[in-house]
Every structure is written in structure tokens, then in C-alpha cells.
Image 1 (cartoon, one colour):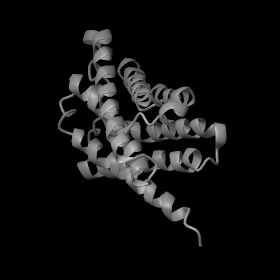
Image 2 (cartoon, rainbow, N blue to C red):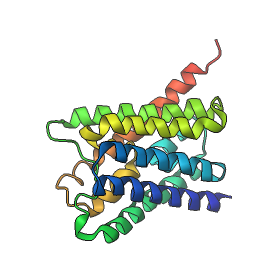
Image 3 (cartoon, helix red, strand yellow):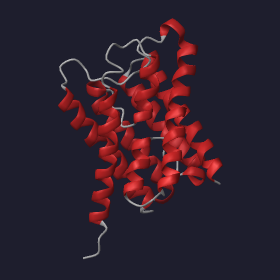
Image 4 (spheres, rainbow, N blue to C red):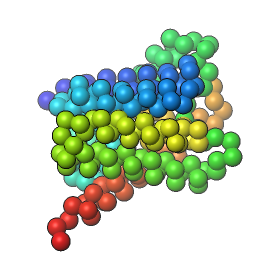
Length: 215
């Protein structure tokens, strides 16, 4: 079962980066980019949710690990294949787009957005995403509509944060495109997404634990 989960996480993350970053590279339209990410997450949650839980995001895995929803060994495996899936997705996207790839949808802070501002925004937006996962999927409150709630949350977060930081909410989403991007700050700002996004996931786990404590 563990090997099946790893394959599901790899394919899901590959698709998220290929479609999500691809939409950013090809169209640049904020609505299209937000929907591309949200719809991929929703579709794969329905497709592979019963296999791996469809984390397809190291920040989600770390957030669920912090809340005791996944064991450490499995979490490490998930994160490794997610990062590999992100790199693979970006490499194929780079090949397909060729010289038209440009920044390849890399997530970087916009001009005028400082490091601290970008960090706080990525923490908060990732918190909202993982919070949605905890309170719709983990709790079971949303039932079969949990993927819709999660996908819409991601769409909304990108609609707001996309122009400011790229609204990554996902280290794998940032890593893959950064490796193949021509954006000058793609690699130097990568640490923001590798630290802020998991922190947002951990905060969501803490809030979920607090809100579900019995009085």
C-alpha cells in the first residue's frame, strides 16, 4: 500500500506543477492560474484520496505529521516523492514549452514585496489551505465534498496572493519551476517557500488541535 501511495503522490504532484505552473507560464491570467491549481487538487483528491490522501504538497504532509495524522517514516517518503514529482513536472513542462517557457511559472515575491511580507503571506495562505484540509477532510465534516472545499480554498488563496508571491503554498510547487526558470530571483527566494509554507501547515495543526479539544 505504501508503494501505491508514493506513486499516487508523485503523479499528483507532477500534475499540479505541470498544469498549475503551466497555466502561469502560458497564460499568466490570474483566474486561469488559480483555477488550474484548485481543479487539479480537487480532481486528484477524488481520484487518489483513498490511496494516499492526496497531499501532493510537503507543507500539507508536514502539517498532517504535526497533528499526528501520518507517521514520520511515511511523511519523509511522501515529501521526497512530492519534491521529485515537482521537479519532473517542471522538467517536462520546460521541454514542452521550450523557449516560450520563460519564468516557467516560478513563484517569486513581486517587486515591492519584501522578504518579511512574502514570508508572512505564505505562512498565512498555507495555514488557510491546511486548515481547510483538517476541518473538511480530516474531521470528516464535509464528507464527499471535502475535495471541493480544499480545491476552492487553494483557488481563493492564489487569487489573492498570486500577484504578490506567486501564492505557492507548496515547496514542491516552488522548487520544480525554480530549477528551470529564467527568473533571476527564483532560486534565491526559494527558502521562503521551504520555511514559510511548512510553518503554516504546523500552525494549522495546532489550531485544529485547540479547536477540537473537549471542554
